[in-house]
Image (cartoon, rainbow, N blue to C red; front, side, top):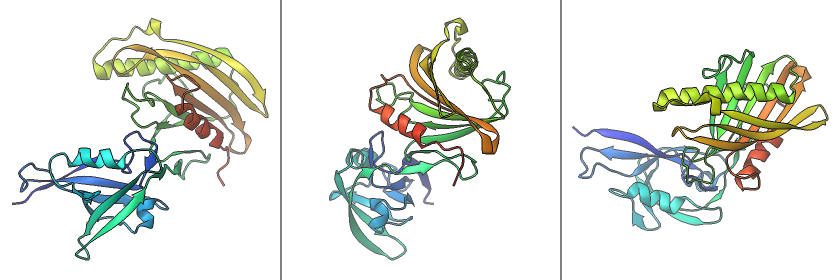
Length: 296
């Protein structure tokens, strides 16, 4: 009997850590009837207002060729990544099969910058991040730092290739704290909370990756930039353990404000081990600047 296994191989093809996308998401098909167990790719998601959507590509379409080359079989995943990933402006020609209509067609797509995605609609606040950044939400008490006794939650977004040390996006991310009531943060209080936060992350990574972090070596060095229009700004560094069990340092910027209409304090933190002039900081600061206390 024929057995089909599906494996997600790319999110919004054209991603792979690059800045351009054609705007679709696909699954590779593996089949027991194939000698090498590999088949074509099935489209499972098409983003609105992207080249894929404008070309009429639909969920269920099967990618059988790219730039005139058959992508079925061994090496197909690499072929797809090599041709679809890249900066905006590059173009690719896909050959697709639509089973529902029994026809084959072609679509020539030009990569565009990733569109922005808003945070979950249930959040009372608003921010945007590139659609290829991975979102996550955690409730207080945070699993890795239950000593932080706030009430509220944390929204996080992680840059593509977050775990790849060779990537310019390595360990670059943003998180938004949404805390009940008015919280006043001095530099000392911010540093103390961040020390607890990152010691907790280091301990959790140690448990998961089987290493013992020296928590005395986890450190924070932050300074206040002042207050403007009710917003406190800080910058600094956090030294803690990465998943490989090595100490490393990230640069950080933080903005905190009281959102009176919601009776919550919001904190937007952006962090990366890359120098603050590196390109990743353009995305990080755009996320910070997009934050709004009230969702329209």
